[in-house]
Structure formats: structure tokens, C-alpha cells
Length: 160
Length: 160
DNA sequence: CCGATTGTCGATAAAATTGATCGTGATTAT
DNA sequence: ATAATCACGATCAATTTTATCGACAATCGG
Image (cartoon, rainbow over all chains, first blue to last red; front, side, top):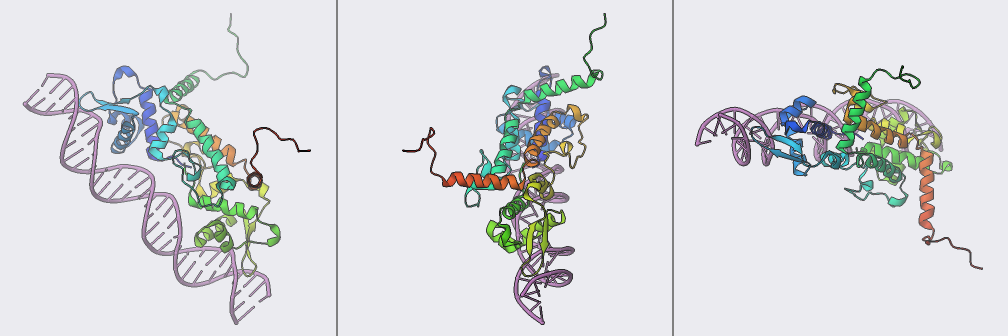
């Protein structure tokens, strides 16, 4: 039930791009790699795959780099993880995107399958409904909470 | 996000044991392997691990074999999968059973982590709350449904 | 046009993991 | 005793993962 480094790096890179100030233009592989602590050459491969899948656009040369090809609200983590890490489903016979029949005599009464179908649906419900925009928004909220003084037990009223 | 063969085989073997007629006594590795289409020697390893973890008991010799060490209602798929396949969490920094810090500057505001924590919780909610007894019960229900004639759109009243 | 910068692409490789298999021994029932 | 069965360690082949290298192509600023 593990996310590969490939998947991890890809998601991190996209979150990095999504939370980047658009005024700064495209981000180079080197920048993202340094920022997220990812081996440059490995990240290169990953970003290329994301580009070929239509999630990123790029431009070579001075001032070049990568940028999101669509608004962050239109890129789900489900897409990204499937692309870089394969199907979300724990076993192929419950995958929607890469279904493969299993060997059990009847899929509809297979105990393993019934349970793993629940698992795959739970995972997909989260990842297919979480966009890069959702993630950056949650991160901002978490950062605000972290920078505010510790909350009290009961709500405070302003002093007057 | 994949379940290994090891995990798959282990769960299948346990479900097999849980749904087995207790009057028949212990089941041999050979029997389970044949029934579930699992390589004998591989299954041997797996059952041994499950035994050492206290989920199975065994006896060698004629009439020997494996049986559940506890009632099926007390063995969760979460235990089994963790044992055979490692942590449920997609990344180590959201694992409860095998937490490992990650490299990001602040775990509490890491976008990847926040999302993967949801995923790990969703998976654990299912697998830690599903016992072998739950599984065999669902299987029986599914089998009954499969053997009954196809249901109509609206409830039928008995002919008279 | 030059040359620095940066993405593109294919090949390769080291390490880890997975999915087994083999052989030998230990234990038990008959 | 002996046949059946679990116990256990070693080993192994294939695959997957995680990269790394080097050459090439596109782009931009001057």
C-alpha cells in the first residue's frame, strides 16, 4: 500500500508549482529539485512524464522551465498518482482504470475482492476529489494555524 | 498502493480457514494451497509467519495442519496485511505502526502528508474494522444473492 | 549569430523487493 | 519405525525501483 518515490516526488513537484507565485514565471527542474530535495535527473524524468500526460507545459532555454498546463483546481492527485505509480487499487481485479480478472472462481463472492474493493473506493474517493488547489489551500490554512498563538479552551471575546 | 502476493495469499488462506467446517479439523498447507491456487512452498512461509505472530496454531505429523488461533471475529485484515505487507500508510511519515520522519521542513504543513494521512486513515478504518468473521459473512450473503433468482424492480407479493 | 541555459531522450546500472524454490531437519500420529 | 506434516534457512531469478550519464535539441539574451 505504498506510494513510490516517483509518485511522491511528482506530487511534491506539482504542489510546489501550484503554490508558486505566478509572477515568477516558469520553474526550472533545478529549482524544484533543490526546493523539494529531489535528485535532479530523476525529477527530470518525472516532469517529462507529467508533461507528456498534459499536466505540465515547458520551455527550454534561458528563462525557461516548467509550469502547470491547467489551473490547479483541474488537476487531481488521483490523475497524478495513477500516472506515476499505476492503479490505485490494491489488487487488479478491483481496478477501474486497469482491471484484470483474478483467478478466483467467482469474483462476485470473493472475500478478498469484496474488501479490497472498499479499500480502492476509499482511496479513489479521496485522491480523485483532491485537486492541487485543494492541497495548497489546506497547506495555507495549516500554516496560518501554526503561526497564530496557541488557541484557548474556550472562545475569547475581544477586550474593550 | 498495491497489495503484495504475500499479503494476498495470506488473507486468502485465512479466509479459507475461517470459512472451513471446524469439524474437519486442521487444514494442511497442501490443502489450502490447492484450494486457493497458491504455490505450496510460498504458502508455507506465509503460514509460518502468521503462526509466529499468534494468528495461527499448528501441529505437525499425520492429521496435523493449521487452524486459526483465535475466533475469526478477533482477527482483523489490518493485522494480517501489516504483518505480511508492512504498514498501511502510503508514506512512512503518516504511519501509526511504523512512523518515520520525512525530510520536509514542517510535517504539519506538508501538503503531501496532509493528503496521505487521509488516505492512510481511510484504509485503516476499513481494514482494522474488518475481521475474518465479517468477511466470511459478506461472502455468504453474496453467495445467497447469487443463487437466488434475479430480483425485480419492485417488491413482489406472493401469488394467491 | 553566439553561447549559455534549459528541456528531451535513450541507455544503462546499482539496489531493493518480490515471488518464489530447494533441501534438510524436527515433530507427531499410527 | 515410518509416513505425514510443519519448521527453517539458504538461495535464486525476475522485476521494479531509483536513480545516473551523456548527447542532443530548443530557446533566449545580447
